[in-house]
Image 1 (cartoon, rainbow, N blue to C red):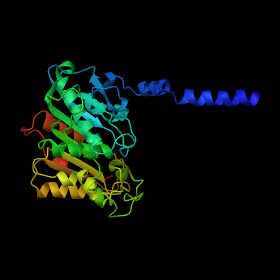
Image 2 (cartoon, rainbow, N blue to C red):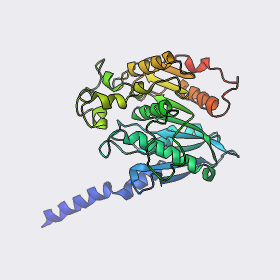
Image 3 (spheres, rainbow, N blue to C red):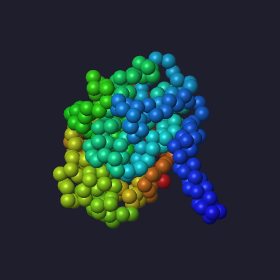
Image 4 (cartoon, rainbow, N blue to C red):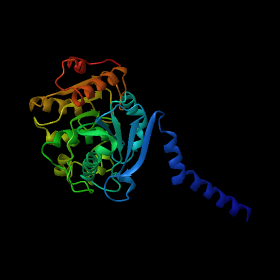
Length: 320
């Protein structure tokens, strides 16, 4: 009998450890000081937790309508949480010159491509529809994502003008999913070329993040793999974009960003920048990146035609 009570007690302990209440406490513990954070706002007109966003309003928020910075998390489209923005996005918001948003989207175990980009555009539409409420200029929206999030922001930048992948999610269909500029951190760009050089795992396998995203081994459903690949949507109409990638990335090889940048330049897309970080791995960070990202957002969300920003600074290759 004692063993049974011990077993039940152990199960109760496990449940308490993994309970939603505990997850909520952990999430709240991450909330940065100096911000009003409005959590878990439903943007899709339903109550699906996967389709929520957080709003980050700096307490020193400047007056007037401010640009919005939107963060899209990574995690191989099968993991990750919008709370990642609490550490990554807040340094850019401390100036009080932006209002921040961080979105969750349906992961690949719940929905297959193109559900993820449909969610992202639905979130952008929601932000625009609620612009007055949060004091933002809906015509000035910058997005930033890393890894799988980098892939999604690249897709936002590449399809903003064409209207592809707009979808019909949510109650804000009078708005659109256009953005003004994007920062793509080491995101996949060409699914069918992910294994051109050996890396940490085989992307062509059925268990890879890319295969799980489209619902089939990428080499067996090339049409859908291409549909989900940013390189398939390259045109001169791409929104201004800053791409950065570490040369020693073994999860998303640097050739992915090489190819995307090369194709955008060949297509004569304007205002495209690429920072390769020598020796950088997946999840690369570099002290110079924050400065250049801040310059990028300043230029394209505040003073696009200003000569105050030296564009050459964005193209210099940093060292680790």
